[in-house]
Amino acid sequence: MSPKIAIIGAGPGGLTLASILIRNGISPTVFEHDAFPEARTQGGSLDLHPGTGQEALAACGLTPQFEKYARYGDQDFTLGDKYGNRVMEIKDKDVGRPEIDRGQLRQILLDSIPKGVIKWNHHLVAATEDSLQFRDHIEVGWDLIVGADGAWSKIRPLCCYVTPYYTGISAFRMMLTQASTKHAALSELVGKGTYYSLGEDDGLALAYQRMDNDMISVYAFGRRPEDWIQKSGIDVNDHNAIRAALKKDYTHWDPKLCAVFDECEDNISFQSLYMLPVGLRWPAHKKMALIGDAAHLMTPFAGEGVNLAMTDALDLANAIISKPNDIAAAIAEFQPRMWERAKIAGEVAWENAMARFEPGALVRSKRRFQRRLESQGNLQLLELADRKNNEHISILLEHV
Ligand SMILES: Cc1cc2nc3c(=O)[nH]c(=O)nc-3n(C[C@H](O)[C@H](O)[C@H](O)COP(=O)(O)OP(=O)(O)OC[C@H]3O[C@@H](n4cnc5c(N)ncnc54)[C@H](O)[C@@H]3O)c2cc1C
Image 1 (spheres, rainbow, N blue to C red):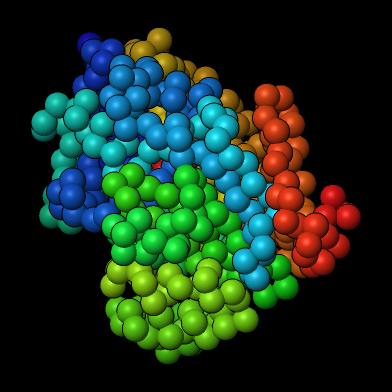
Image 2 (image 1 turned 120 degrees about the horizontal axis):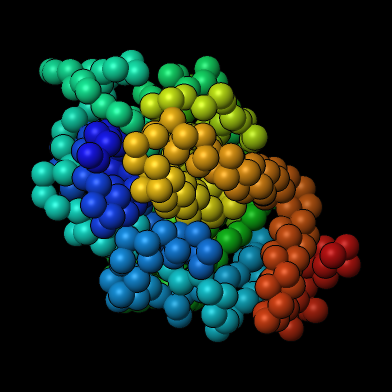
């Protein structure tokens, strides 16, 4: 008989787990806080990596659907400074990490899951190992409960007693639509991929990301105190107030880079970034497991979060499929692989979070990207010729 499995959270981790299990004859129940699939926008673009996110999608049988949306031509990367100078550029290279919009990835996964499996509008309030307490009812009788419920997991406290802490970095997220026509200059600046500008000594960064359908997603990251937004007096629902605050913060930046503050849609959101300690682990529970951000929340600066969540789902699904009648053994088998992977990515994510927001950030970041590229062998780093004419950049590059 199939084990009775509850998955909390229909994010990339929970949906991948449900999809693989269903494909292998095990039907779980997914409980999701959102009232319905389109209840909120899903965010920007992300790259799925061959050995992790792409492999998990293959286990869902979704490679053809992925290929339909995968943008192999959007893998360009530019690193620049706050004055608009470009320090490093990778162009027209297939680095094996095609981009896909989060919303498209989610839709592919949702389409692979039969109706009725996902219980929308189910916000988990509390849990014990025997019960799931929702706002208006309790669900019992589970062989396995999986916390795929992200940063503020309600399942995590049953596995370990560690809570996320503030990383010192927060972000405003903005969107540009009809970029090539309505925002032609910014669209040209971003090109086909990601454009990252680091402010170094001011602790600020701007990250532009090309999305599908002529959209661009932009993050304005900054080193700020945890209570900064409350103390600033900025009303997070007042987009013009946010625009004014950002323009003040970035007043010493190249106006071309900052044009987004005026040009973006009226949908700016603010997010403080939290993390769990790198290397966090706990004694295996006999019927509770965590995957994705619930298990190893980290800063986004390694670009691995979704890939890790999906790989955790793949590993846990495989363990359950091979031991459907021994869930405790399946959990014990799966966890060490997840922890090992998350520790490596978590160290990179933390180091990148430090390295991108301090003096010398451009040199260090460039060096890190360079090492990453060299380790992939088939890539060339293209330094821009015009940097020779730029004293600031030339000095920085001497240290590389
Ligand atoms: C600014 C930023 C940029 C990022 N960029 C990238 C990137 O480029 N590439 C990348 O790989 N990763 C990126 N990440 C990380 C990535 O978003 C996460 O690691 C990933 O979404 C984790 O997936 P998950 O399924 O574990 O959790 P989530 O995506 O957080 O999904 C959790 C789900 O659980 C639901 N839920 C939460 N609480 C409850 C509850 N109590 N009851 C019921 N349901 C609940 C939520 O509604 C949600 O649907 C970024 C993160 C941030 C903050």
